[in-house]
Length: 295
Image 1 (spheres, rainbow, N blue to C red):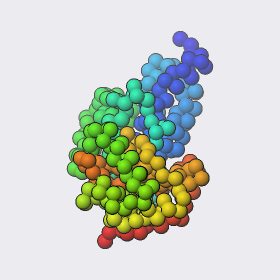
Image 2 (image 1 turned 90 degrees about the vertical axis):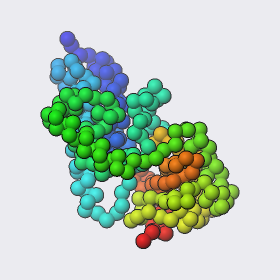
Image 3 (image 1 turned 30 degrees about the vertical axis):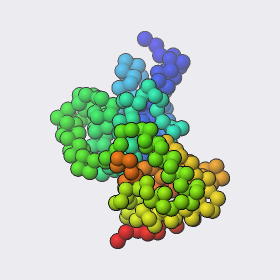
Image 4 (image 1 turned 60 degrees about the horizontal axis):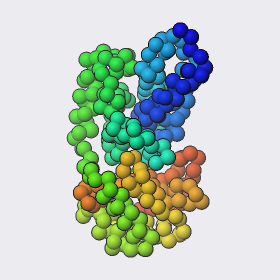
């Protein structure tokens, strides 16, 4: 059986979203995930008959192994710097289509993605392949080059680590969207009281420019002062949920991803746009993220 360039390309494109989804969940960065997918394409282009017989399994294995290697490198880099790091949000333009929702959005919330950072690369890969992509342990074993028993242990340990701090999420998508819209409207009106009323009493803000969690009231003051500088704020779909983005010169300067607890916003993940597709982070954003750190 001969593989033509057209059929090879079509096969790869059919699997592209799956590969991007795996790589993003492994790396917490759209740009890094796209690099992994591109490298997978190059290897697929040079692949032999084995890849032709089991294309999806072959592509999944290659992308996962590339992501594991890249994650180990990134973890080493981050361990040598004092600059806090949070995963890059998955914005609407990168999101899977509606038909992929059941299989690909179950773990997409930003809070869950953040919890995955607590796992080793092998644990993270095993958990994602088993719980999100419904891979059997025998397939995971071939992908990770381990035994099925070892992979079962990896998944069990990963579950224990992430379930110890499971994120509470409201299931009413429309309510989440309406809360985000109300929050954005309050920002535009410079209405601090309305913003605070949408936050849970114990709400905190986690930012990638600060060492710890920020007090919500102080953060609201910073958001209002930032909006007053002329940045455009809009409601946005982020990681399968809702939040807000601040735009400067048409580029994202700051994204706020909301985790809900009932009708209230319990956690705000504030991620500066530095490093997103070559963007630079405005000083006003970094100042916002560095202030009001709780002791």
